[in-house]
Image (cartoon, rainbow, N blue to C red):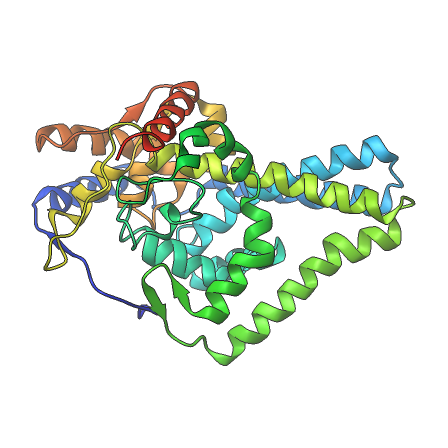
Length: 361
């Protein structure tokens, strides 16, 4: 696909590492007679997460819940919006669920249904974040707000001294910002950090406005009409849903790139990075809780984040198996493989990272 982002190009070095790794991963799928796309377990996950999400929505709208019950259903919607996003939509927009692009496109469109614009997501995440991971002024994921210093190249402000405490609260605003502000700025402003975006195709304007209106109607107007509660209860529930969703999404992402020991490379005056792109991904990305089946199930395999960055079109249900190949090959090439053993370890490392970023230049 032709890139929709026009910007200064960062040039990466070369290495035999990725060629060797890709050959070994291809051989793994060939020997086991499986495809890199969705298997029966992935189909179960899609059905499970969508069923809970849809079920919670209709229970909220048609179940005549009281204040407490409605609040619990809003929280459930927040959790499962995040889970649908990372388990279904995320793989779909990477083309990792099916060999058939129509299947991926349909499931990827669910991003629009749950409030986030799929077109903007592809640009921000697939093209930009996956290419320029942890590079200041290129990776939009580390240039979110001046209130949180996420790289050594960002300006150190006095308020950052406390960011390892307040950042967790700002993370809760992640999804509500996407839904009401971020998507609009990127789509109509046609810029993500230093990347100037091409004008979207005409039909994307219709999609953007139609699905935004659909989302606001389905999750604000319809509950206000159908729930036997005051509109302020609906608004509070909607906000609670987004606080939970935003926190979950931010944590799933930050645990993989903003940890102690990970790099934030700076291109030289020619725009060159010494490492090859694949080695760059290993230096800026970490796995966590690889042995925790529950984390893998709900996080959409994002705890195998190195594997996801190296093999975007491989469905996340295969990441556990190929992670052993990646780790072994990295050791052979004497490339560091970053891992945090538990989710708690990743939390602690992120907390320490935020504290260090808030106090050192």
